[in-house]
Image 1 (tube, rainbow, N blue to C red):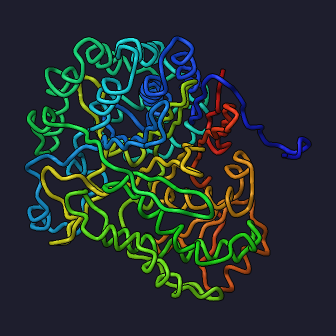
Image 2: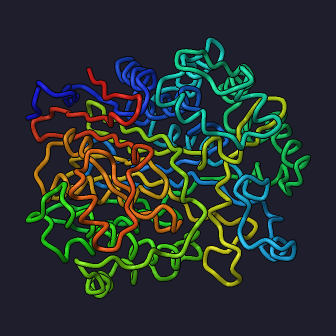
Length: 528
């Protein structure tokens, strides 16, 4: 139990349903849907779309999503891949011919077709109870009436210097980044939401909305077509999982990076983390080294599911043992090769559990802050820059190509014990996410923390993608730990920003639901 004389928050307990997410207005929408007879799938959709207005720098209709879902009355978990594909005419060879060595972060070449809207409609059709028109109404109201800008949102909004053209016009209507409490309205998005409420997914992927997106992208030099948008389709797939200290961690398979979290945990399992100080130098060093090794494997192997061929090798116990043997507890190893998502932290995550036991773990993102920084002219749909997750190396599994999905950073998670789901969870933060999953699970299972304490605990992260980043520590660490890590060869610095943001719900065997929400974000857990 926490010390009630110190700052902090209590977990939230309820019996009938719960949502944990990064903005209280979205959590409230989810609980309202549950109280009105919707299930966890319905509530997750309604809250997710609202988050695109509450945190537009993090997510929106122009983004992608991934979902893990446990049906009511069952313990199986299904995975839904709502990530979009590159336009059919995209060519790595053509970009190399223009002298590019990477996909430009904020160029039109990085814009992939948004997949989330299609996934929301599939999720509702296959698992929901309510009509989409009902689920979209809170977001329509938010877009029309406006949402006051919350503190963490304002902080992140102020760092989106790459907004360009129509992106600046739609997302900086004040002519500058908003201050806390100023109201953001998106009338163009309200119109889009009304159309898809009436016409279904065709209201987004066909007709005037799609024409606006395609015309805007082509005016910027994109190769996107109406056919690319109309062909968008999400896929069901089987999760990947791995055991850790009495639990089973369930992750979304490629093109997401969930396998990276599993490899990290497999490496950490070779050591006695429970005997280490959870906030000491040994643990931070070990996690940093495991991160470098696991992310290096990710960079080599993970890609579109149709191009990932060495997943079993990556998740094999022998692979983890060999990698763990490379770790020297007294000396840091070099960082992994760089990738473009180093500075990415712009994602929303939510989890919902209903009274019948359906649980949804959903993550939804436009990649970098406001994605590519580009938007459609008429309706103001912000375009993601997921294509920057591709590489341009000829023959690489993750080489950019038309119709292909890029390697994705966003990963929803679930934890089972004894074959029973006990915790749907997610840790936002771009590149940090696999390390965040591993740390949260280890806090719970190695160090016996309660769920809110496990989320609140200070974090560290080694930036394997940029030599200048080195090993970052949140300010909850002591100076003695900082100095110890520097002595082991880490380029240590105090993190200038909070690392990630987690949300989770624990399903107690008694039927009680326990929700926890990260104080690094603006959100909360709410139940009824």
